[in-house]
Image (cartoon, rainbow, N blue to C red; front, top):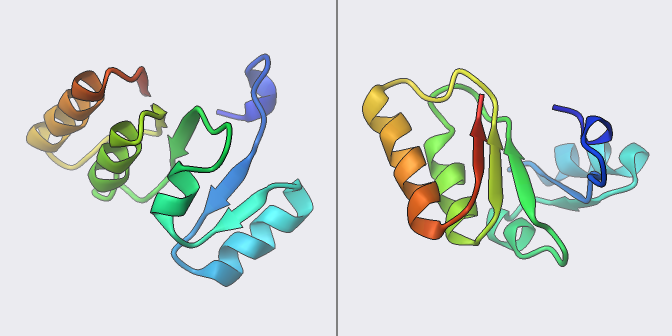
Length: 102
């Protein structure tokens, strides 16, 4: 889902485990780059995150983002097992954040 497709949304920051990848993406898009997930999650004004990791690697960032109070947009395939999907849903519900798990 593109931020331009959501009224009032914008790309504020980007995360990659590799700082060079984050910086290369952030520069042309005019956003802040992070290679530390916790730092990204406390970026000023950040209200929601889009999880775009490979299938099987969505659970951990969803749990971290929901614990930080961020709303979640997660691309499909959500996870590799129903149990991991349930953990994602429970993390969001427990933190009181909205989720769009498409």
